Length: 340
Image (tube, rainbow, N blue to C red):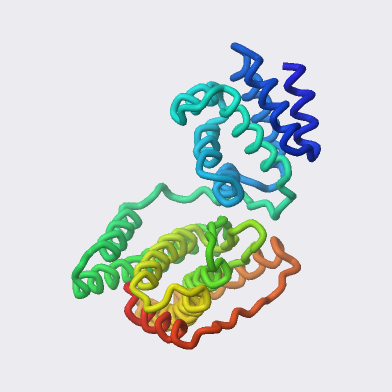
């Protein structure tokens, strides 16, 4: 174990391929103790990363973003934090001990190099997942997969209606029991390559429509969305669904150029923002008992804005401009056809 610890220290300190190979060799040669040695080192490195604001879900996403699928699979295998994980991983991947140990050392080097990020406050303890959310997920899944536009439109409209009602009902119930409630929470949502900027715009549009705020961390491929629990759930569900629909529309597009595709997604995000804002306004106006509802929603918006400013006291605003007019038009047309 001591030999590996010394080799790992050199690899972690910024060493290159030879230091990584030396650490992997020492780990692979440690015989029956290699699992316990790996567990001890992983526990330390992951614990340090968590203390710098990274959650296990974030670490897995960074493995996918910065390394390769094999590292991501090891990250999933390691997430429980207990040995054995190297031996099952090596067997599943058909790797010798040195190759498995190399993947492990490379993954831990990534984790060890991650900087401090804004920590997420623990999410308020809310009610268990409701049957309503399960129903909304099922409706959106059917809307994405059906080959009949009329059925997709009906399913998606029903999902949006249930989502809006569920959010408003939860806000009113929470306010009745606890005043304005226990405060907003936050979650990180991955924004994957390519065209991350345009996808972050789409996520921001969905967040705004659901009374949340979104801050994009371009260097790490995620946005932090701040809001109340039910609204955060709605944002992730709807963003994922709209992204799937955008991807389907892109594959039917007339061009494969980068400018076309990026412009498509920028135009798509802009039109979705308009549609969602209008839908939210209409749903709120049609809700019964507006005298009870409007002050609650206003208070929540203030809470979300204040929480975002506390978490991110300094932010910058950037603009994305589509360079392909045809791509932009196709994106807006696809947004008009999107179901939600």
